[in-house]
Length: 125
Image 1: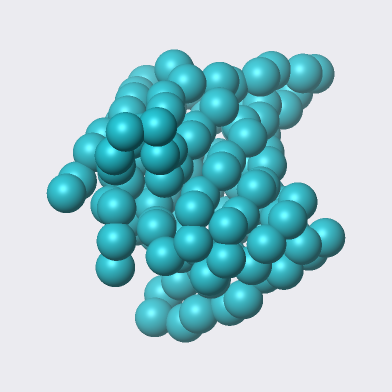
Image 2: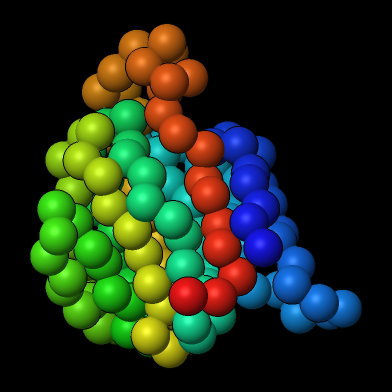
């Protein structure tokens, strides 16, 4: 099952009654940065995509596998990973994960933001 949400509005994606598998919070802007909260249940993932600006993924709780350019890196609670703009990446929750994704909000034009792929969510590997 594949579901999509657009990059800006919040989304709660459901796999069954009262069982959210992926929750993508609303975009919050501050100074020249913007961020979203992510919650991904174990064994679920966000399909490969690229961001429109520099992106920092900070894991609040759990363990997430980040796949970039054919390489995998485990990121644990309290760790972060910086990903340059337009670099394809995929997130896989090894455990239940809570994270914050932060973007350089002023790093690109509005038309570049519109070209950024929407979040594509798959419910199981």
